[in-house]
Image 1 (cartoon, rainbow, N blue to C red):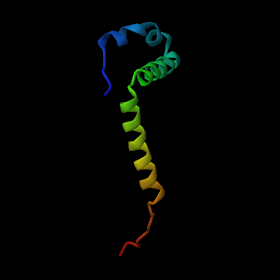
Image 2 (cartoon, rainbow, N blue to C red; image 1 turned 45 degrees about the vertical axis):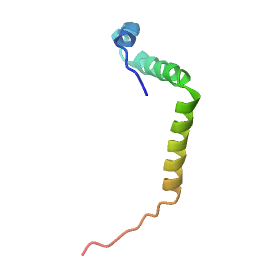
Image 3 (tube, rainbow, N blue to C red; image 1 turned 180 degrees about the horizontal axis):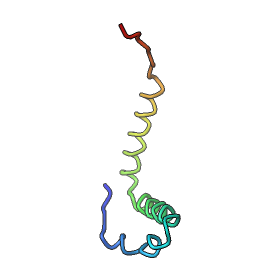
Image 4 (cartoon, helix red, strand yellow; image 1 turned 120 degrees about the horizontal axis):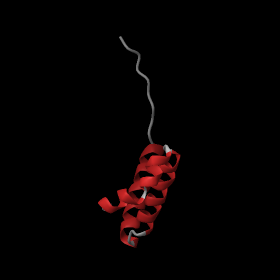
Length: 68
């Protein structure tokens, strides 16, 4: 689903040299660009996976058993 391109690493070399604050912003922008390039089918599959996980977590029951 996600394709890693070596050229993307070269785009933000100045961000790495700055000290780290811009690294997070550069990574966020990269994730947004990749997300917007997904097809509707890929978006639907990701959303269905997230909905199944949310449903599973909402029905989860936490129990505590005393140790012998």
